[in-house]
Length: 298
Image (cartoon, rainbow, N blue to C red):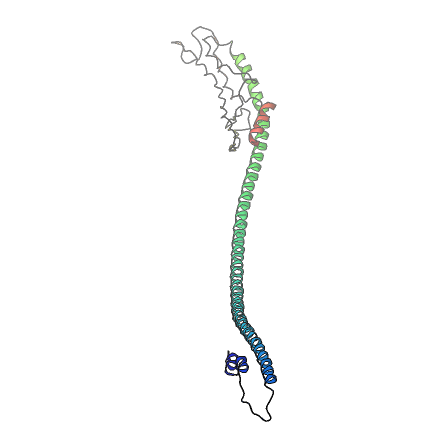
């Protein structure tokens, strides 16, 4: 704009075209040559002015573009600065989040380790307690088994000692009864209850073993506590009671006194009846012995 104003203040092509000079008579210039030169100068000046105008417009356009570029540069710089700040903020936040997550993960891992250690201690204590209980239970079972085995051996030994004497007493009692029966003149005493055959008698676990043989005395088998069974319990075995018949009482007639004989004269006195034989113990059959062993083992 300043160049354009300077050009406007200077002489223009039209001024040159219309310029008039005064004439002199002596020593003047050729008028036609001067006019031709002025026209040439005016045309050249006009061309230069147009060119200058074009260049001025071009310069102005370039200035506007430069201003735009400067504005874009500032915008880009601001954008770069903002992007840098955003990147720094993002990196800082990411670093803080990473540190927080790492710290929380470490705390959680430590907590999990502590819980695992506590659980390990609890399981170890529980295992030790269960193992001690199992050991005590096994020791109790072994002790009971040893006691039952020792009692079973003692029981079998006593049975082997008692069986011969019981068989001898059982065989002697019927013979004495048969020998004394014909001499009685009075009504015979009621017969003893019928004794079951040995094969049909139920297995018994008597508490006492009275023995009629001298020197043996009364032997009591050891009491064996029954071992609990989860499936079944052995039914109680009834104790055999062999009732002996009552001793016959002598009939005394009036006038004869206490002689123990009948009223018939001249009859010999009645002999005393034999003592009742002790209850007979049936010999332990192999099957019964096997059942008793099976009961103790259960």
